[in-house]
Image: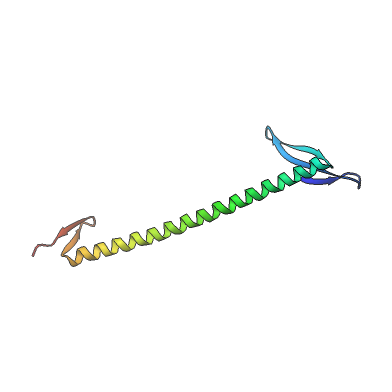
Length: 102
């Protein structure tokens, strides 16, 4: 999307797009139609940028929540193991809690 100047005179507005995978320039001229097309293009770019920022912030929040959840799970596992050990249990073969017999 740009204003091109031909022969140092009037500026003309073009929009670049792809048709069947090939780049094509769409001509809008130099008048009101061109100004409106430029305004629509700017609004679309701003909306896209806002959407990207929104999803980046959401992704950051999810990553933070995942990190906190992982830390909490580790802490709960540690407390659970400590509670079982103080209650007289031991970890048999690394995967099963058994009560010690005295």
